[in-house]
Image (cartoon, rainbow, N blue to C red; front, side, top):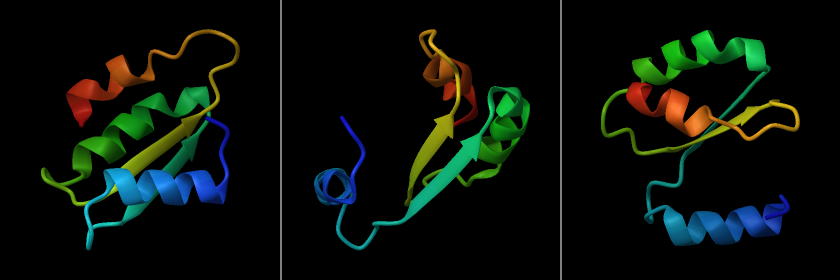
Length: 72
């Protein structure tokens, strides 16, 4: 999906429950993985927010979901 505000608003209305439309956006270069793990591990369990992570990974397939899953 190409990012646009309209696409994001549609996505937010569908996936985020009413009253809990909080979004945390984190941007980091590939070298920021350790810091990203630390930040995500510090979020409380049951956090009522959507966390979007933007990381430059180049042309290869991203393993970010697998790498971060134990910390979320």
